[in-house]
Length: 374
Image 1 (spheres, one colour):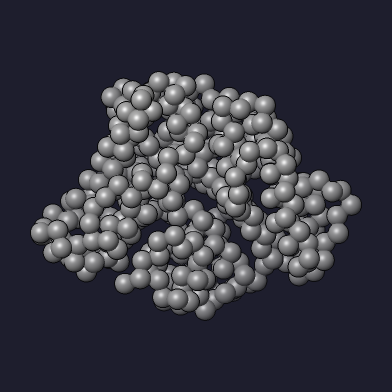
Image 2 (cartoon, one colour; image 1 turned 180 degrees about the horizontal axis):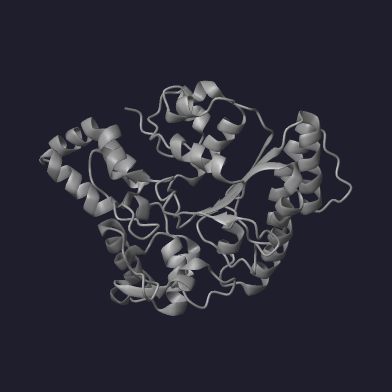
């Protein structure tokens, strides 16, 4: 089996025979139930692959979906112009970095669709680009934004720079509402959900599916998907580590399962850690060892986080819903980043009980805390 570690392009994955956990039934439901979506998931949880799969679908690349649920669910395969914007492509240390990335990516599509903007701002160019793409193709446009929040996360602790990023992104994303007549579908993904007032006030028609029970499994690996797709490979993992297959499944569950994005829904496995474990045939802290985001270290220093106090933390719905530009409570950031997850829900008081999702995160967070203290 070829494990697609680090591969985020659906077309490359399918054409080269890498294993794919089929999410196309969820995607078909998504595109047929609404138009404007927002999805928050932890890093390395499959957001970029989701975006790439949607791009292939809306481009009408039917051949890539052979053998998948979408092959039988979709009957029309209409090709739309797709604008795929990736804000994960570079670091952001100053305002010009954001301008450069937006303008560079828009320029590529302007050449493709013959768009000439009178307004040279990123939002002005995007608005004209959407109009030009529709006029050239005769089809409404699909806009996919990957890691919409990276500039804001990298500027945590720098209030001035974060406010500058916010102003640019607020106007840029606001175009999606004013261009409604020309848009077929839009999805923005990121690690965190910043306050609608601060970023999305001009785009208040977004449907936030981050905590929707309908789409809890649109990213990650479910228990059934692990058994259906990787059962033989788990058997090999068990043999190499001197375990029975049941023991291997239990170890995988303890180390990498436990992410709950909605109350009363099954837990999800971290796909990055699962794929690495099956590939290397040994258990490790793969997700945590890929690097700790700068913003997390900043929060740990600023709020003096105690790992013991985070376990069993009770949070209100509003506390988890969004992150303020000036972070005054780290819990929402920790939850949305995947360091804490939902373990219980009190319907009467609408409060969530949070805890570490699994042993990998719990052990890694404690190790990180000790290093920050030093």
